[in-house]
Length: 402
Ligand code: AMP
Ligand code: MG
Image (cartoon, rainbow, N blue to C red):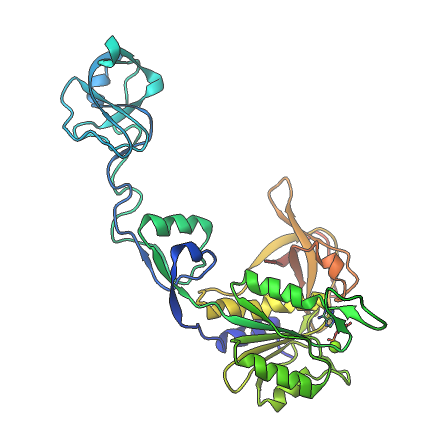
């Protein structure tokens, strides 16, 4: 049995980025940058006023109150492009260019206009440079603003727009085939008959895959029959980069996933991980290069193993620099039991206490089949292999779930 860390390492080793593609800006949220983003202009592009007020020379305001002649107006999009002379002020709006010759902006609240708006009286002296954002102080033309390998978030959309990236080069989204195995399964719109249950794994897997940026294809259920499963996997490989199956990887008579993969000539990189829940996790590659994650059938095991292994692969395929979930450290709110030879990834919720510490509350759950308890889970709390009990108040590694 290999450790979780080794399994993640193996996934990374066998996962290559897909080719990049050009995508219109309005469709790139959540996509992974496959190019550097470079500023095509200084920001701000001119000395910009941060306030509504008056552009002046600071040295002329030392003996405030002082009166200055208003010689013009500079608004956003319509500046005043002459040179400010001694004794003069320009009425200026937030976002407008500061005229040459002015070096400070006094805010409108500290001034009032006289004589039909031809003169302004400044009530207080203004410091040199006040309320001006200098040209290029945020970024200079030619500087790299975003590195490739990051996932584009909402704030980055503004950056891309501001520098004129109407199209962006991003990693292709992997196409993921989702395939539930199990003779007991019926679909969501059916009433389960005797010995049957509704498939729920396909929905959680598809959802996690979408959160990871993949395009999901549903493959119809496979019975627990090697030949049927084999045909479905073979068909799915034609249109999928990755196939994620659930169920059929344990030691039972009807656990046929590995047999089907082997008959298809798959290379199996691992099939057992020292992990609870999720020990019988399979990672394999078919002869045509399609990767297969054979996840266990129990819904909580599915969520844990998908996010540790399949998610890492899906992000790596899009070119994410650091694709695996990040471990954090929290204080354990109550004691939990570990396992002799497997690392335990236990459902938990994270909060902070009044001292600003991150606290992990392990949830009560009925084991790897308890997907109802898991619906309230926001994180996994990790008990190292060989630790019998992790006591309350000890430090615990945690992973936030997507
Ligand atoms: P297996 O790994 O195939 O032995 O399945 C383990 C448990 O997970 C069994 O109780 C299955 O009924 C259940 N299970 C398997 N596939 C699904 C699925 N798609 N949705 C919900 N439960 C499932
Ligand atoms: Mg099964």
